Length: 286
Ligand code: HEM
Image (cartoon, rainbow, N blue to C red; front, side, top):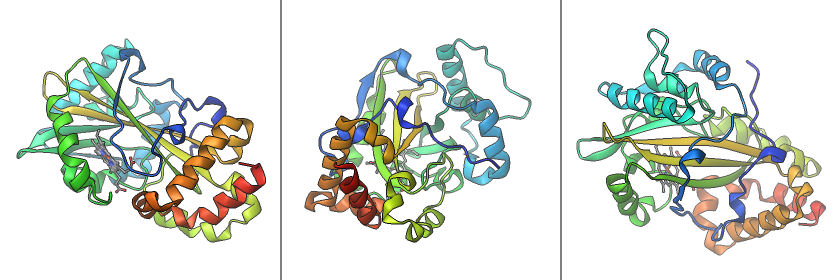
């Protein structure tokens, strides 16, 4: 299958490495306008997603029994937002039908046995996770790989899930550096295995800043929440066209590779990328 690449910098509206506190994890949720829930399409999701789903069914889709009403509410809300009439092909789960209207991946969070749990996921641009492994997990278990998530964030995040008002849409963003520019990246191993072959001089075109723009919104009728993930990506070389972004990226990289960045560095395996990023920054004058 043709590898679909994420949008390039000329059209990337996010630069989360310019946010303060780049060295550490943060909740970073902020309200956005209703109109901004989903961003303009970069691909044709109604074509792209079925192709990815056919090739990787278990990675891209899983739903728990009992999530159907929440899925149907997501479809109705996205159709209402987009001014579309709900239409579901026979046999297609409602969350997958909804996911064909937007570039984002859609994750349905519902309370199960007292814990916020991922009950259905349509995941066609995963960054190192899969629907088959993630669906059924609680917020705690989903974040087990994130250092100190339980101590530092869990109570606050669960409270946001408990109390978020229906008319508010929250957004958060993150960023990382990877040697891949494709949307579908479920597994880190083959990506990292290609790192050793990259020459220092090629760092700017082989490395990508990969950003997730996430939103969170209550489903007022069924009580769950919809979490969305949209991938944006550009090469390091693309930073050369924008000295402000290049300088912000250089500062964020120095911060995250410094002492305060130990958790993020370890989680994102950034030390693997450090020699290449430094070579790029030296050459680009960042
Ligand atoms: C809205 C509240 C949430 C916050 C504040 C939050 C926070 C985080 C943080 C700090 C990370 C580490 C990477 C990063 O900086 O983004 C992370 C990773 C992750 N989050 Fe969340 N998260 C939230 C909601 C969710 C939800 C609803 C899901 C449901 C699937 C989820 C699934 C994940 C996964 C799968 C990872 C990657 C873990 C891995 O590498 O295996 N998060 N999250």
